[in-house]
Every structure is written in C-alpha cells, then in structure tokens.
Length: 164
Image (cartoon, rainbow, N blue to C red; front, side):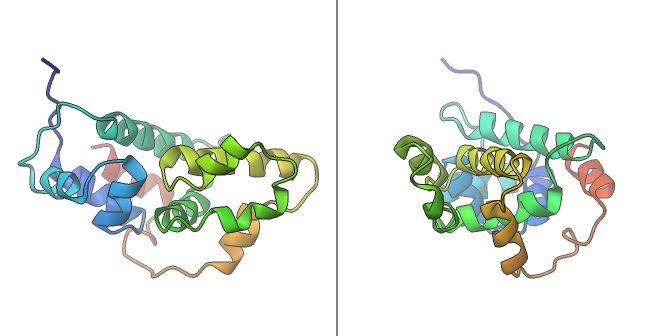
C-alpha cells in the first residue's frame, strides 16, 4: 500500500494563487484532476498515487531556487510560463525553433505540464547564452496577467508564505 501524503490546504491554495493560476490550471500543470486540487485545498484529500504530490514538491523547490541571487529562474517569468502552459499555449512561442528542437522536446513543451515549462525555460537560457532572443522573453513581454496580491509580493515574502 502506498504511503499517504498529507497536504496543508493553505499552502497549496497560496501557491496556486501566488502563481496566478486557477484550480484547473494548476491541476493540468501537476497532472492531477481538479477534484484533487479542490480536496488538497480543503484539507480533506490525501493522495496515495499519481505524480501530483512529487511535482508539487518540485514546484516548491523551484520557487525556493528562484529566491537565490544566483538563480537562473526569474519568479515573474516562471509565473507567466506556468500561466501560458496551463492553457496549453506554450508551443506557439517555440514553433520557430522546430528545426532545432526534437519532436519529443516540442511535445513536452506543449504538454501543459510543469516539465514542459522547465524545458522551455532551459532552452531559453541556452538561446540567451548564444545571444539570441528567447521565446520566453517574447512571451513575458507580450503577456498581460491580472495582478493579485501574491503577484505583487516580493520574492522573499512569497517564498516565506509558501514554505511555512
């Protein structure tokens, strides 16, 4: 029998809101159902299978990494990537590089999952090192998201909220 993992409802809700995502969008990114997200946020759900809890833990780790001064992850950029990925709209920024990218790489970027976001961010980092304009830079500059109280928090305050 798989070990059940308990979730703290406020942390999951705060994480979702901090990223500017609704329950459905977070569910898509984590590869779980919207019902699971709802249960996690209400504190009534224990999950014994699936990759959602592991991905949620990885996402928290990524947010912690983003708070480091030497990090390649910009929290504002990550928020926008996640929002676009949850809508399964990330691929349109990468189609111009289809000659350079393997089909599986592009498929992963288009998956709407966290792994696709990270692959896109890593590819952008490579392009920026080569002095090229990265798709993510175009996306971040072109996307407008609604401001929430979490989006206006400093990175330090946000991470303190999420990792309490």
